[in-house]
Image (tube, rainbow, N blue to C red; front, top):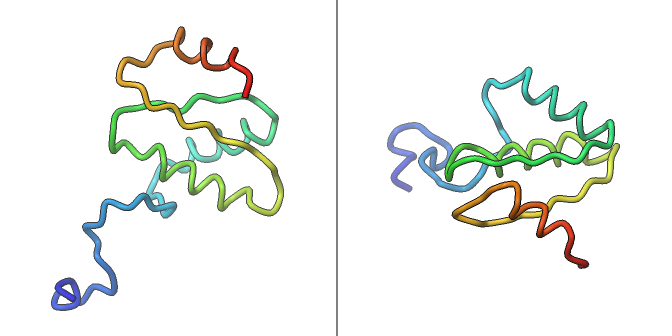
Length: 91
């Protein structure tokens, strides 16, 4: 593959989310503690800011110790009213 010419084992330019986060140790610890305490959290941000990677890291970290659920909301105009109206719907 093209990346092997540079000595890389894999495509480092992939857009696939990765749970291998660099930095953010304090934020990751706060997130882990919040989930373990049973809090309901909202993770939001612009496209490409690492939300999915953060959740993949969390899933891998808590895989054997916790049960948690995630909900994905894709909304261009995202605000608190949208979140609360969604949470009132029965699934």
